[in-house]
Image 1: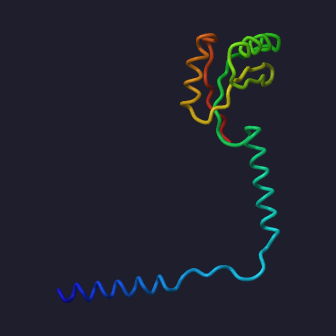
Image 2 (image 1 turned 45 degrees about the vertical axis):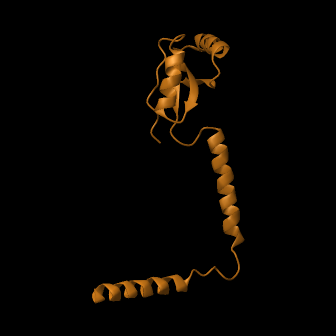
Image 3 (image 1 turned 90 degrees about the vertical axis):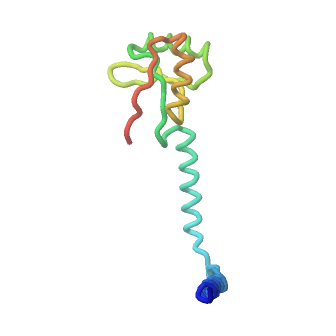
Length: 129
């Protein structure tokens, strides 16, 4: 029992020593050029996130073909649904893409709804960056 008390006292002393050392704050001038770079990078990330240029996103493809039909499909889609939509050109055809979903689950839920009107809609595999 005496050994247990000695171990407890020793452990308590060690913990007390660590807690007394404390953390010291940085002293001296602050490098403001680093702060400016961080702000610039944060602004760039915000812009890229708004433009959906960052991260893996899922889209639903409604159509693949010529420009005239793509315009008809996107007009019909916009009359019925509110997810974002765009026509993308990949030579020699146009694609109608809708949505910008963060995960596959969100895309699958929207796909179930959209398939009622566009039965050939599907979720293409996201591009690897």
